Image (cartoon, rainbow, N blue to C red; front, side, top):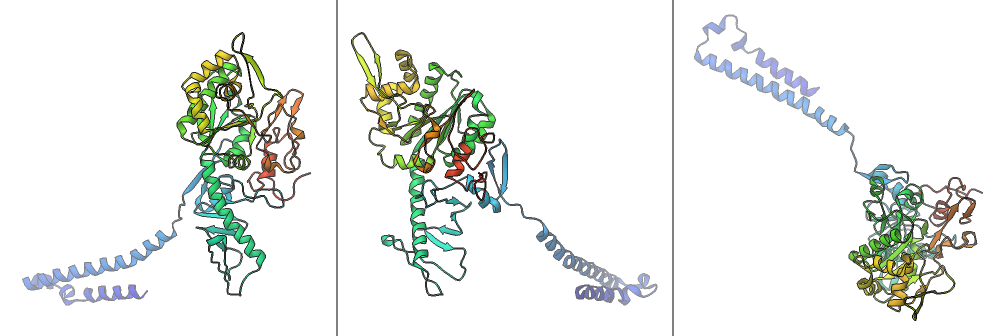
Length: 453
């Protein structure tokens, strides 16, 4: 208001000048007066423009600040073929399905302690934040923490004079877990996981996989199929490979896809090659627990046979060959050192020729190369499971120790896990969703609160 009055006063003063208001003075003004009148007019216009600027500029600032701020969004798959855009400030709520703990020590409840990235460099867990190896308690504002990693000892100071030993122990464990997380992530990054499937199972068998364990190893898992599928390619982040192999479940199609898996692994530079089928649930933390015990620089063939005795075949009339193989239906792993030894015999299309020569499917041919030609025996891992086993007999009291699970639904023949309390069989016919919620209850699709009976 004061600014408006000042402008009005200035304009009024100029308007009342005798050079502009004297009647009939315009015709009698000399050149000097005409020049002075022109200068006064310039001054009037200048004052008016200045006042307009002072009035309009603050309004423009207010309108600028009133505009809503558009935050960066993160797109993720919701498990139903939909790409959901999530504002950055909401990423913490949806981070559960994007990055989770890769195998901390189970707590007394039997479930893995859950740690996930909140969208920045912080890792959230039960109300506390681990930031650059320093832990801050979000639930106690008058307490500050100071960490010292020397000799794994942690000291905490607070204005209140200290905290209980139980809290110190809990926080010390959190810091050790954060360090463990980084080690586990490094191990996971060294693993190449392949899933063999076919076009007609993209919307059925792959669906529970993409919604559950695939999210624990998105960057390490590749889907090998036999047809283009833009939706699947998008949902996997470009990790779908069309092998152009036959879509049949006979030797030719199976060996063709395994050949593509093996060659892709060789070129990946990864340390471990782990194969599963599209009817397998892979417990990623348990897999890392297993691989931690073995050196990828040595020759390792890890799996579980589906036959009680080694397989026998005759290469000629006199030679009787016997070897054990890890069934692909339960999953198996090869160390890079062993795979490189196998490469001259199995890479570059040679694997398919070998399959044709011995007239056996893909997983048996892997065992033939490793177990017979290279004399590297199969190391039996009981925690691998295929649908050849009775799933309901596999205990789910401590499922975190099991590595793979499977299922079979063929007419009246049903072989599924006995996991109760999460989803009905109609909602979850494979039982993979229920198993995943048993292992990782913080996933967004898992029922919250008490388990349903």
